[in-house]
Image (cartoon, rainbow, N blue to C red):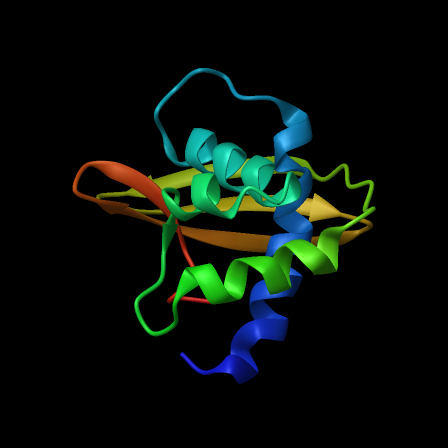
Length: 119
């Protein structure tokens, strides 16, 4: 992944950021991991967010502050339309401001993570 993909990451994260507003159902599925990731990102807690992200080509410690800055002051309220799992991958489908996006998730060592490598 190159730094040129940062806008795509930001766009997907922007749509998914409001997932935190939907609340954590206490589960351990991809939706709960997405909620935890975007909640931490929204709070600017990059160390907490890092445990819920899969990213191999870039250092998330460098990417996170850039993503968090793009969401500063945002009041997001997307709707989670669907969560579909297929083995160790999943897709969280959300709608925000009339636009629908799919957030890729991957299971790594038994834990669900937002798959930023895929984005």
